[in-house]
Length: 421
Image (cartoon, rainbow, N blue to C red; front, side, top):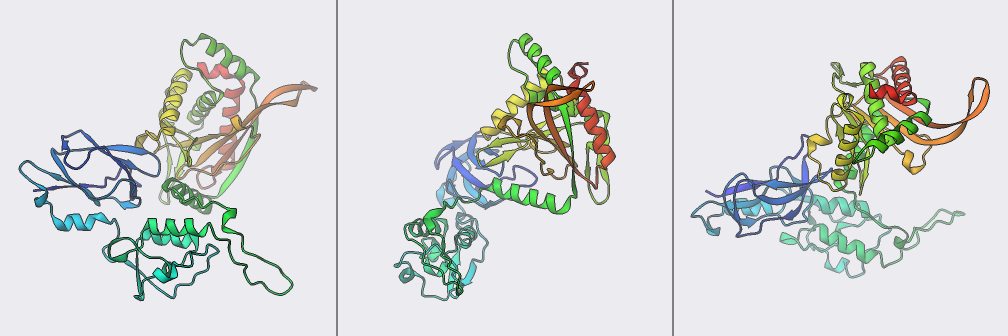
C-alpha cells in the first residue's frame, strides 16, 4: 500500500509551513533517515527525514508552496513492487492544493477600494460566473494590495485564482500611476502613486512576531524599571580574560547574560511566568537572547545559564547565533526560555524598553556603554555607564522584586569578579 508523506509539525505552535525545497525527486529511492525535503517554519528552515523505505512515487506539493497545513499529504512513497498506477488518486488530487475542500467564494460585487489599478485588459478576462474561486493565500494578498478579485483571471484548477495571479496583477499595477481620489471642497488630496512604495509580503515569521507581541502588550500589564551600571571594571576584566583564551572571545553581552543568570538565581521570583491558575517560578535559569536575522528576530535559549561559566556562555551564544542566522536552529533551541535579554548597545542605542516575550514574566533591555559624567565621593568624574531597563509583567513581578533583581544584576556587572566565583 502506498504511503503518504505528510507535512510535519516541527514545533508545538506550528500550524502551517512552507515547502522550501525537495531534496529527493520523483523516482528516487528512499531509505529511513534520508533527507527528503526542506520545510520552512516561522523561525527556521529544517530538513525532514524519511521514516519508511521505498521510492518517491509522486510529489504532490511543489517546492516554494506556502501556507501548507500540517498533516497535509505532500508526497507519496511507493513500497516494493508498487508503481505509479498504485497511487491513490484521491490522495493525489486532494493534496495538490493545500486549501479547504470547499473553495472560498466571493461575489463579484466585492468593493474595489484600491490605489493599485489593475491593467485595463484585466476586467475583460474576469470570470463571467457570479462566483469566484480563490485560494486563501491569494485572497489575503489581494485584500492587502487592494485588488478586486473580479478583475483577475485565475490560472489554477477550474479557474481558481492563485498566488501567481495576484503577484502578476500587483506587478502590472505598479507601472500605472494611481488616479486622483475625489476630495471634499477646500481640501486637495491625491492617492499616493503605486510607485511610491514597495509591497513586501509578510513572512510567517513577521506574522508570528506581530501576533505574539501584540498579545503581549494587550494582555500583560508592562511596567519599566531602569538602572545605570558602571562597566569600567567589567571591560578591564573582559580584556584580561580574552588575553588568556586560546580560542573564542567573551563579549560584553556574554557577561550581561551571566550576570542576569546569577541575579535570577538570587532573586527567583523574577524568573517566573503567569497563567490564570498559577505563577510558575522556575528552578532553572534558561535565558532567551534576541538575535536579529533576515526578516525578523529569533530568541535562542542559553539553557542552565546560571550553571555555565563565562567561556561556556560565550561558546554557546556564538554557536546559537550563527545557526540562528543560517536558519538551522532546532525548535527546542529557541523555545522554552524563562527570561529574555535584548541588547541594542552595539547599535549605539542609549536606552530602550523591550516588549515581554510571552509567557515569560520579564525581559531586560541593554543599552550601549558610553562615557558619562558621574559623581564619586562628592567629586565629578567620568565613567563608562550602561543603562539597562527591565520590562516586567506586573501580574508576575512586583515592583520590589524588579528593583531587587536589578540591584543584584548591577552588583555583578560593577563587581564582575563575583561572576567568576
